[in-house]
Image (cartoon, rainbow over all chains, first blue to last red; front, side, top):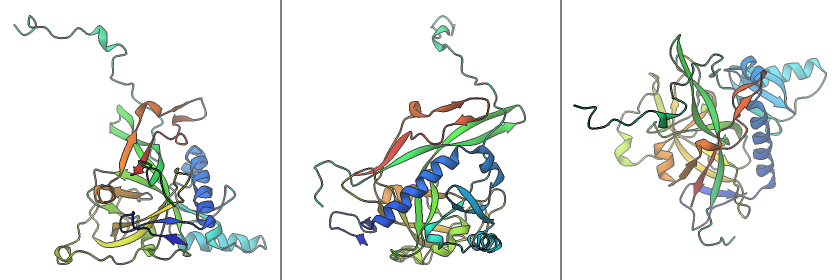
Length: 122
Length: 180
């Protein structure tokens, strides 16, 4: 249920379907939580994951592989995989943080460094 | 729905993401990039599957780039005549084609709902060498086309400060993306 309006630029529309807003909210809540889970980010780095209630229920290199894995695991539990639209499918970025950081080259109090004067250039 | 004068159409929160920058074994410092949580799906298909993704603000890129794993969501775009005979620029050494996808943004403006924007993207023909792209890259063409205002406050970037977790707290917004 998209709404394009005269005051919007071409290609832009508002979504009036509450399910769309709910899905976006659900993804954002997951994403904000997941971003601070370093162990999970490291474990699933560079993978596509299928997530249900903050639990990874399938993984693979592609959406199809992740979905198949989730379907297989669900079958092993004797359960049925809910439609992907009701789950979260997310491509986890590669590890891109540092465990050991060099100290900042910035002097704590720069004001203690006197500005160059005309005398200095002579 | 009528909107108040000066009220923007769309405002989405921007979050910091830590990216490593290493100039050698003795010099490694974190840099910060800026990400908006979005969902991505096919253009003009409201009921289709939309997948959650981080959209990285990438004004250093001329064109937006769709991660290879999302390429099945894209449709061929309508390009202006002058672009039809031009070669499509490669990305990270990988040949690409053009496509369009619908990108849905959460909207902090209460009177409006989530907002969908069609994006022209480069679609790599395969995964690039090195780390795979998992974020949608929103390049200058996209940001200019919709005339976004981007506000980033480095003062709002919060660092985790405990033994278990270090680095940037990626759950605290540090700015917003706004369409007036």
